[in-house]
Image (cartoon, rainbow, N blue to C red; front, side, top):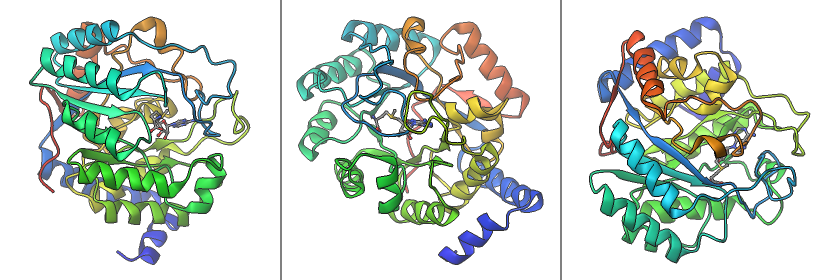
Length: 333
Ligand code: SAM
């Protein structure tokens, strides 16, 4: 579709057009993945961050954030516990924390891969140099999530301090792809200042990049950020965009995000029913979970326990899906 046609789909969406896209997206996901939903074990291993993104609760200027950094031992224990529960992908996500040098990260990644050679490891630790990405890949990192946040340079400046540049974010994504990572990009829906035309630019950027994964959830405000009084992003528009992304990138790995689950009762299941095919339960230790607060009232799923995971499986079963134990690599593009 042209940009104009994508914009029309967004501007003139109705309950009827949403249902048509939804049904087509679910059919497309079923063709690529059957009724399988992949689970990823998310470990939020540090909330120290040197960046100051205006939307984010763990930005460095937020003095009220209670900072924590998990030790390598605790991270390895989270992976062991997750492995026993059936997880075969671990996602290490955190702020841009300078304590975690390449050397320290490389030792950690090598240890995780040694303990669990049959697992995939995803990193989500922000912008780094090409050399750093290469070193992390060399010791076993398989995938990298780095949302582009917005593909419009003006809008990017509205969301970030001047030191952060859209062109560097995009450079990172292309470097990661070039180095052989499975790469995830994505945006927040309803971020302050975002227009529907911006979302069209995001969709076109995704079409151009052809990422293996797309992470997309509603913007949700955090009271200790400059965006404390901005309205939350719309869950309805997020669902609509999930369907659009599924149709534009039929084989993409598409999570029903925690932010969507927070914004909407049963949001993750609704996400699956709009074309998503990945869920990322939190494996971080309970005592730090409330400190990784990107926005308020963040959903705590409890899927890290055997009981919680069984409940998630039942919820998915109830809507006709099966949570699978598998690495769930991206299908060849
Ligand atoms: N530091 C890494 C990075 O920048 O990619 C990973 C951690 S960062 C907290 C992960 C994602 O959280 C961001 O890409 C952003 O889209 C999302 N996020 C941050 N603040 C948010 C908010 N207030 N509402 C919704 N999502 C938010």
